[in-house]
Image 1: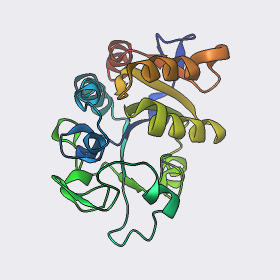
Image 2 (image 1 turned 180 degrees about the vertical axis):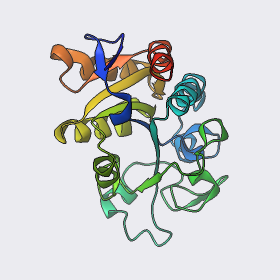
Image 3 (image 1 turned 135 degrees about the vertical axis):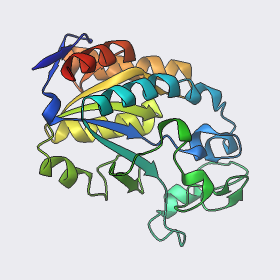
Image 4 (image 1 turned 45 degrees about the vertical axis):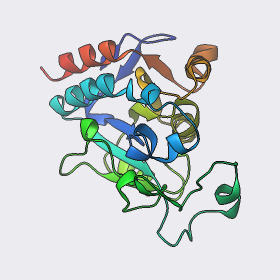
Length: 224
């Protein structure tokens, strides 16, 4: 077993049974003209997570961890998008409408793609999910079980929405999760702080958190 210096206490994991999950590092959320900016958000707040996330990704690859990427988006006909989701909010553009990066949150459009900084390599699965949680209506659970994965290192956006939803789903499936504090991000700094506190509260009710530096250090030891 290896151990990451984490909160609320050390995160013990077996590298062979550990996966890195990169959640929704999509142009639609991290670039101007995408879905996030159409809601009036400052996308630079999310981009701050990219350098730490890339460091963790490089370390995970060096340690031969299973790496999985996710993207939130819908079929071009929007048949998998609930009407409640489509009509919610009062943004100038809604899901499926055309923006600077193509139709918002639609699979196959430019905005649906993962940013270059953490782009998948050949052989790294990409999970296309219609909801916030990465387990809902996807085969993520099957992919992890087939490989005997019991531990998840989690990076991605946004902390309080898709990251939190996925960690909660994973928790209910018996997986131990560590969220990389500076490799996740929110459009709202206060949400970022509180979301991380919620994960590690009460002795780690949903999991652990640690900075990228601690994760990279532990993975470096695991790869030797």
